[in-house]
Image (tube, rainbow, N blue to C red; front, side, top):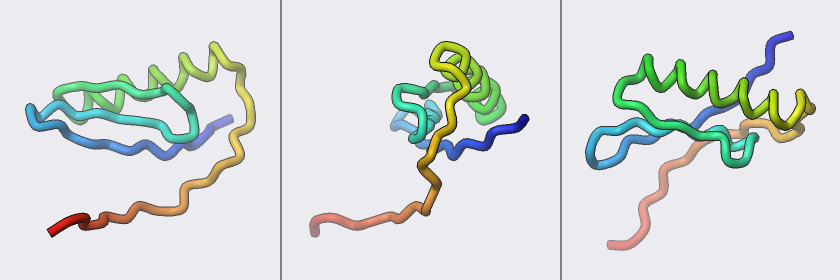
Length: 71
């Protein structure tokens, strides 16, 4: 059975890509390329589910918003 998870991808000042799975606390990884990042985050999710059991996760992705703060 397939499970779908939302991932948040960011890039630091050195160009390193980072992926975080908000529904799975502590499930994140990083890589230099997008294909490598996708491979690693799938592995991280699989490991997370293996360690924590294949639970049902109730939160649902709603959206993203950019916000400007300050001057």
